Length: 451
Ligand code: HEM
Image: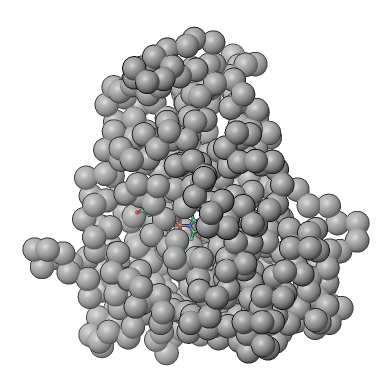
């Protein structure tokens, strides 16, 4: 290990990850057990070098170094092989755009997530959560992972499109999106780039799902352009957005943003909600306090947007779930020009890995980091959390644009379902974290018990 001084105020520990293999570097450890492997690195240093194949990559393990990366989006741009593979799927939207174009795109998309708009989307969330709560049957096992995917796909589709085509869109999105997410991840982690070109059934299914989603979105956009009215939904906001010079997003750009929102917004929120049910089942004392809060605030009603400020414990439960199981467990940046981080020179082209999962579980940043403890988010305790130590939504100019949308949706879903149901674990079913496109439980059968 080398110790280098970056600034006068502190010496950073820079280390190399052990057990690097010829040719593949640490790709096998990353492929097989990424959470354990990455989680073992912070004790080595504040900045740890590893190799994915022949590519050098760095993992900042100290929140201050993470902040330096995320707050300098020009030097640490989104990039690397993952972004290149996402482009054919997502086009040029918020996730895939370079720094130079991203600022314009963000200005144009941001109004769609304005507070007043979120209040309108919350009505869709409220309806869907109530319908979902009514759909379960006592004692009939539910795959909670599937159920949460279905719920967030319906909410996002209806928040995007309030058109008369919405029911068709919901069905198509529920059918195609999981195929897309699986295929996109397989492509992202395939170092050869060959997988997508093989004549496999999974590739044909992926191509068909992608084709159907593209056609659906194109059809809806052209219908909206003809009607030329603001329907209060996300798509209207994207179509009506004007930049400072009066320019707007082209139809292709709107299309790419819609694909991006679907891919970024559905699985993330669903995975975190699924983890929340799993954690609640294992922590009856937390579940009891959640139930007490929803009973007091709602008294059997369906929760609405106006209830959210009073659902404080519900929000703490979700905030803590995002700490232990951040859906975006890792994301990447590529260095655009030679630079220095933690006193270490990073040449242009180096990949930087940011892992909220690793940071959130680092001892010293959180007391008992492995313990599920929603009250660590009581305002007076939350104020003590170091800057940059909690980043489920990232940080800086590329911070999640849907953070408030996702928090609102999750709070309403937890409250609506917990006010009617308790979800019991299925005996004998073991839960393990799967680090894919997002951090999931895999199938999670649970048994709903009426409260
Ligand atoms: C609990 C739920 C969610 C989590 C944990 C989450 C997490 C994240 C993270 C970590 C990033 C930053 C990635 C990076 O810096 O490279 C991000 C970006 C993004 N998220 Fe989310 N997200 C969630 C929900 C949503 C929702 C509901 C939507 C849309 C409806 C959404 C849309 C996006 C978009 C478009 C970006 C790219 C933003 C940009 O680069 O300007 N996300 N998300």
